[in-house]
Length: 549
Image 1 (cartoon, rainbow, N blue to C red):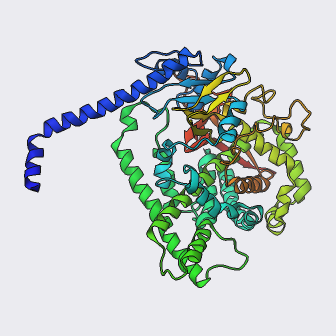
Image 2: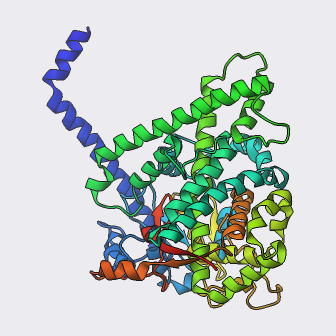
Image 3: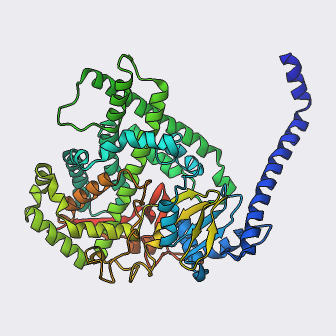
């Protein structure tokens, strides 16, 4: 029987290939017809759609639009420019770039519509996010799941992010930060130019390693398989706006993603076995030591299956995906926010003086004692309102990411002018950077003004409610933001009085003269954001650091 089937397949291979190609093309054409029909109805209703044609959708507007921003910047910058063409619709529009996205998008640069999309309605995370995260985490996870699966993960891990639990990591963070400081001192002695973003990512990986798997990784000082695999995957990850099929479908990239994703999974798998044995024997852990994320998951497993001699395979796979998600998100955006804080303070010396004055007031002028003071009295980092204002202003100007939701039948968003926008059949892309630089919400929106976070609500400078969206708002807000805030406050407290940072973009531009029609700034900033997992400074923020006298 099998021989007859094989002979048939061999004799009809051409016909079978032709039939499969016909099916694939037919499905693609049907998908295109569905999208074009959606946009026919949108335009018929007078809703905001850029220049359109049935054959190309909105693809024809992209080349001209992309010439107005740097080639390597993130897609959202072009969308922000495009939104200005529809002032009567409160900064939103529909866009069809089929076949480069699974669904067309409703792009939202309006605070009112963002609140509706992410808070008013229970709009789910779209399945396409699983594809984005897959190389880093290996499948569905707490960030991409919806419904019961999301609630299960949130319920299991939420206790780890309480203020009391997070504070227990203070000593670990300080110890790891001291390694970071030694590396900064070495660069100060050498007087070299280096990637501050890359070095800070290594630093945050060591912190999140302790928090997730009880492993400091030591990636700042040597090779660590988990950290190196993550960095390799980030370097190979495809960007949303990449339209070159030779790059997008490069077979080498698929192999790299498979290999290093497997390496990450094995590392976390081994950590689970190690911590399971430790939890069974209550060893390798002092009474005051906080539970890492895998400890919480293992303890939950042991409570439900007390006599099981080893961890269940399905359970291990599920926990591994969650841990890898926290490892990715927990280092990536926090590192970029710290780097942008240094950058903005170097450009605004008055603000830097105010931060240093505040730190002197709280910790005294002997900077060598700051680390020990923070270990002994973690509550001191909650007495830094101006430092927090600096961090919020950095996150406002350079948010790590936007928000993506999937529309639902019967759900319409409504702007202040009474226009209603259907969501069924669309992704909803909320562009945080555009909202947080919108002059309707932030006076002098491109200026670095930490004081806007310290004035009374009646002050015109005070931002509207929910206008700060760097960690998202609502049920799907960032579960790890309390850890991120602690990381950032401790890092700035330990470094800002000891070092001066100076970016080297001018030196880079002298050595690499700018060519082509595209600009090399966004909103006047040379350190514009590029997609690298989350958003990071272009060129990794080349800097020189000097030790402050």
